[in-house]
Image (cartoon, rainbow, N blue to C red; front, side, top):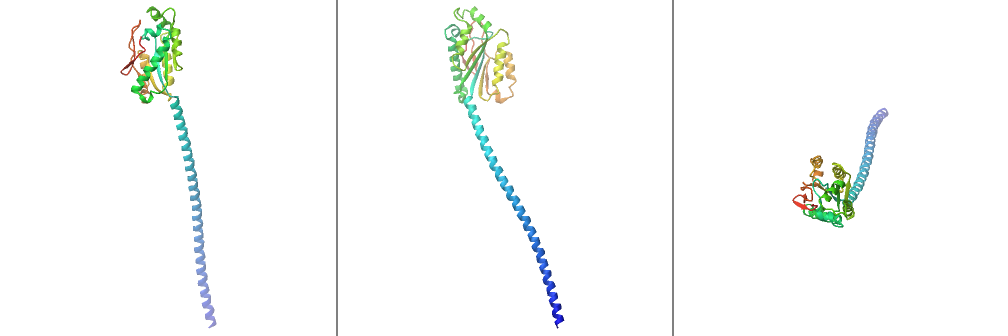
Length: 260
């Protein structure tokens, strides 16, 4: 009887121990799984926090870049201007006689020219009409002086230097530059200024009063496929002649007078 009880107890103990071992193994597995989940959760939390910080930094950088772009655009807008380039060599056209002949005629020529350019911009590009206008005229001093003297346009009491000085002093953005003798000196000056400003974002529009020469045509042909440049340039043939005959700078269908 007692032997049977001992055997039964031993069997039950073995069963209980086996169940306990199985439970312990299961608990170990659960602990490992839980530990893995905790690790993965921590990694995911760190990744999420890192992404959140990265997004915040990106938003901050985007805001700073936006502010810089707005500031840069504001600077461009504040510095924007219209450029008028004039080849005033005597081989094609000159200003009206009275501009050369009268006292302060250069000043009047500069002011009248600016006003007429402003009117043209108001008609064709009203969004730019308020911008300052930079006027740069270039001429061969010797050749122009000889022509005006022969034609009796320039009185002995005046010379072309006086005209150029009055023109340049009319306002701070007006210049009339007299260059030395030589067929291409004026061309090179005009082309050089054009190339300097044509890609400048503050130069919103260029009017080329200098298209009677094939050199200028070739210059503009270099930009014919660049719509960003081509749309910002107005150029027209400058008809006219020598010896005091009248010529006008044509801009689209308008004529605004630098006639002579």
